[in-house]
Length: 464
Ligand code: ARG
Image (cartoon, rainbow, N blue to C red; front, side):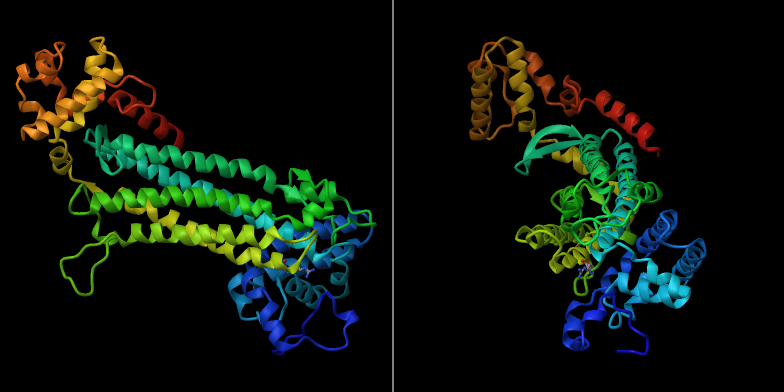
């Protein structure tokens, strides 16, 4: 232990000091120092509340508020890491520091409170700020995708199912699919806010308090929409963390899929995009390489994020009510998820905006006319052939062409008519990607007008 005096929040009952290995094992300041800002906010509101209800004098409150201001100026989570062997957690640190700065007045700050209702309050405040930040950042990724969609302009390429060419789509449509998915992620996070924004203070250790703590005032001061209806749930449930980490896991699942698409598009067989040099990486051996590591890291990190989600669920699943120290283990994973998310969301818009397209590769991929088989099926349906019969006919034509080593465009009309009398010259108009996408009629389709309308909608909604 260093030379700083350690202020324990619970020393009175003990005759011996803590075993040093247990200290190393249990102290959490190196991690939960991250909550410092939130902790100061909570203490500020708490001092005001205690003064309102007559348990702290105005002069004492003044000293406490001044002390909190000094703590805020002097300390950062980073600086607290250096003290991690000396304080049990951020709550003990703030208490000690406050007693140094505000003297005896500080001894009242923990009135009627337990770390059990304190930690959950600071965590909720921290979380809602970070979640709000993530929402803004997701918007920037969406904007960059919309920008990229405008850059993709009129490029049409084969949309895939099972990673096999399926039907022509606008590349812009493909990019907007991710904008859409990210919007759901935003709305999930926004929705979580009402469950994050619940005041747990006043719950004390588990049962509530016999002191006249003004929870309404605390809720208002700290911007909580509601006050808990159950002190036991408030001090022991961390489902609000599970929910947000689940929301971010879904976000990462989307980011990872998107990354995978860009990795494929960047691969030689697809050759659809070129990454900017500033966002690509080389090989220490193969001088020719220009690799998409950034997208691989996003794909890989998503796995770490999902791991944290599993950890959060597992940490809680067997805990009897109420607080158990196991719950301390909620924080490292949550902090890591947010750090990873912030870094990824900061980088992505920059990478996306600098991606260049290779339209010639897209055109080359469209030369395979089997891409138009579905258009041919719909052509026959419009000529009143039953869908499943038309499906069979076109399937047979595709197999026939393959057998004859011909492609659909070079089959004679007479050959087509052997499969159905409904074919006429107009069948050859189908082998055109532009015609294919323009034929689409449903809402949300890849029809260019629908796609441009969507781009306009997003630009208006997100800004450029
Ligand atoms: N560091 C603890 C946590 O993160 C704070 C609460 C400790 N409470 C207790 N009764 N030991 O959960």
